[in-house]
Image (cartoon, rainbow, N blue to C red):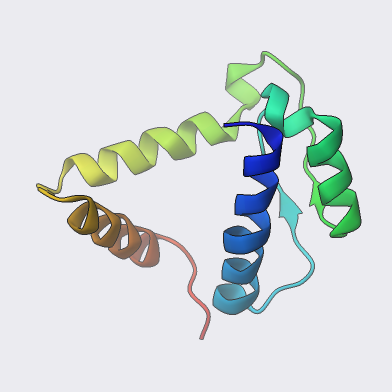
Length: 104
């Protein structure tokens, strides 16, 4: 993946999802310090879309909540026995909806 693909995914999937699911325009976005996340293209995209970024120190695993989120997601889907990509997607969606705040 590169910065162009990353920002395209954010624009076509993440923003519409947040606005639809949570009816929210004012939020802070958390990402790690991967090169595609910190690239000029990505940073400009966040600025152009008025998205505030949460900042945290680099190379601080204890301060890197995304690692915990990935671990939690992995543990959630390991409980399922999805045999197809579609079953896996549906399983992840159900688990996320069950475990995270939903729009009323």
